[in-house]
Image 1 (cartoon, chains in turn yellow, red):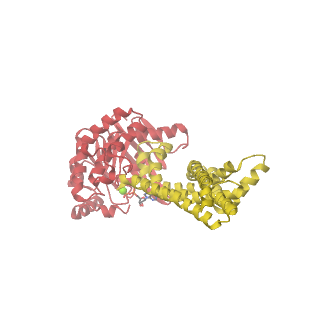
Image 2 (spheres, rainbow over the protein chains, first blue to last red; image 1 turned 45 degrees about the vertical axis):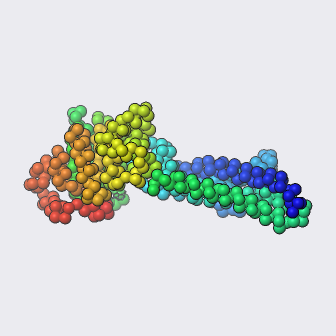
Image 3 (cartoon, rainbow over the protein chains, first blue to last red; image 1 turned 30 degrees about the vertical axis):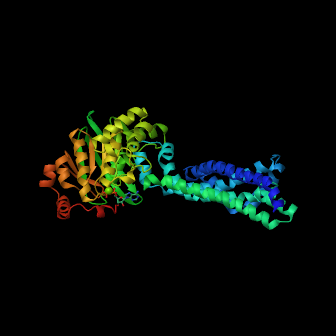
Length: 215
Length: 265
Ligand SMILES: Nc1ncnc2c1ncn2[C@@H]1O[C@H](COP(=O)(O)OP(=O)(O)O)[C@@H](O)[C@H]1O
Ligand SMILES: [Mg+2]
């Protein structure tokens, strides 16, 4: 066990990178997903079509292939990127596709009467979205969005294949240097589970708070 | 057209696909007037109100509110026209059968939303006015409650305060009590009567005959997309000229209002 104990600092560092990857990509993907959802519901056919294609591509291909393509493909286009930003870019693009669908579902679930009440008082489209529709859509979509966040946290382990030294890669290297693969991966798995347990609790608290006004 | 006309609709046509819902409807409402619209389900009452507010764009005809006219036959998409439509919406407030309060806002926030974010009034002033309006519909103590915590009658009174907060030229009510349990109707009808007593211009779609008799200056009867009759309430209810109206009134007074039947429209 002492061999593993020596690995605690590096495991903690891996955990920090994992959290950094997950949180950063989620926040960026949240923003991008919101924009894609807007494009998807807009009446401009071109925007709408672009959004549909985007979502279809990023949901319809394996994340691992997206990671590889961004990591190996961008340099070929003359864009140099180190592994961490490259992974964050991929995770952002990928989760934005899913999140945009969650947002869209939430927006469509807002009652028609809400649009009408806002419209009948002369509110503009964009203000109606911001003041009336988004707050309700966000509440409706919160469970789905929370699940996305948790899934993304686990998906970040795929960054290990493009040399990002996050939790999974740390576990691999600890395993190979100590020949205690099983223990190393058990520890790594436990850490993922811990992170996501915290996220789950956060999600529940958020859902309860947002639902309070509606009770 | 003198300037005491609050809202004037001329030659309104509206179709949904093959269904012609409004067939050349003219309506003039003078300032301070209360017009009650009655008619069987599906006759186009809701559609007419929505056209007056331009929530629904008529296929032909024009709407004039305080001298500003939107015509529905010319080109549709100019920026100026969109602004004009918004302007008319601001001046014609709607009260819906299903209340349509904003569920994520408190009663007061519902009332001040339009004044702050559409009329661009200072927040402190909007709150002051909003509190006064909530007091006027008897809901001072519900100021900070969310709609989910209010009864149907209270919700509809908040909706009325929200409409008033826009200081509209006219308030359009679409069956404001039809979604309410009978014992909650009186409080809403009373709130509307108070507005009438204060000279508020209103167009009210309702099946409440006693209420209409008391509050209306004029009753408009719609049938199959036409205005069949416009009459003072005394004549309309006591001595209706048209047999359609007579049978409609008989049906209504026999069995009282039928919100569940109306629901289908
Ligand atoms: N958005 C719509 N699309 C298609 N048909 C509609 C729509 N709104 C109303 N209608 C139809 O128009 C007719 C008149 O409806 P409405 O104006 O709601 O009547 P009322 O309020 O008098 O019951 C009904 O037959 C209704 O089904
Ligand atoms: Mg109706």
